[in-house]
Length: 389
Ligand SMILES: Cc1ncc(COP(=O)(O)O)c(C=O)c1O
Image 1: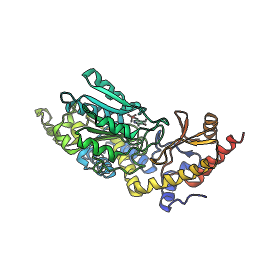
Image 2: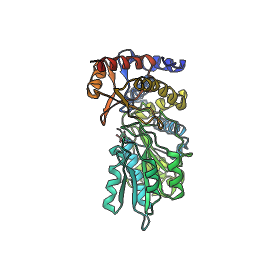
Image 3: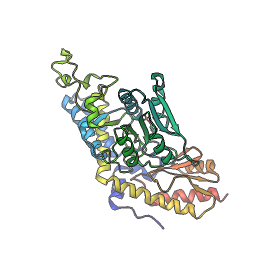
Image 4: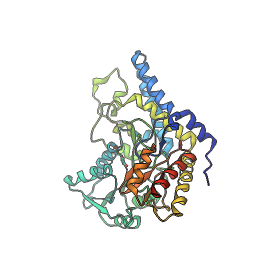
């Protein structure tokens, strides 16, 4: 049975993604394509710059728009948003903030094994400062073992827990509310790498009691490379200081007419963690993309993606040569499948102009709001052709 796609989703596809006739793009988990409106926003900004029409206020405006849209997306205040060039910058910030909260006898950082490396190396680097990283093994199928993680967090000595909202190689959606409660009760810094979920799966940082969240704009937010952000809970913004102080992090430098007074009072919001000038031309595009997601509604985008995936899951269930790798009780925008001839099947999809990834032995399909039901049928026709050989 084919999937019904809401009229406004079809409209947006027609307006923002005219190229979709040429290719089937099922790879938002690698990077999301820029909507037309965001591409135009970048172009217009650069055109203004070329003509000498940009003012300081224009630079402030695009950043504010981006912070406000991102704050709405995660149910935060815009003063809790620091613009960052990627996820790694936010995770390194989180690791630094964890060191500021270290206390005698509390130097353990808990991670799930098989996390994406961006959420591993900043923590491993802390070993030089006497911290200890405890990896909790995954379950046999490679999904995080959330009961074992909860147990690890209940051991003495834990200072921080950093966890992906959605795992990159399986699409497993973490139970953030559960870990937010545990971390809050035990005063453990709760850090979330949100890049594989945000924009495709609803997230409320307050309900999940997240302390620091890091997210690049390039995947499910369909934004330019070089954009991203960190959410830092309000009370941490006033208590913790940046490791790398940028000149715009200081209150006095909001006034460009008196820059050399060097008053070392930091801003009282998350902007104290920003590091100087931003990719301003891209901030407007980030704002446009996130506003588009908000207009469609992330809850609806999630349901749309799951409906597209349902078609593949039920197709696979009727066959004995395709395994569904993604845990169906913790779903996200990512669906991983392993057909019997997985490498050949992936190559056939690429030949048929279906863009998708191959990760840890499985085909990773990551549909987003611009994908249609007929595109999913194209995928299945291609897979059936390979499997019939
Ligand atoms: C879970 C996860 N974190 C982080 C990243 C990327 O980090 P960055 O934005 O720093 O390149 C990826 C994928 O590229 C990822 O899957």
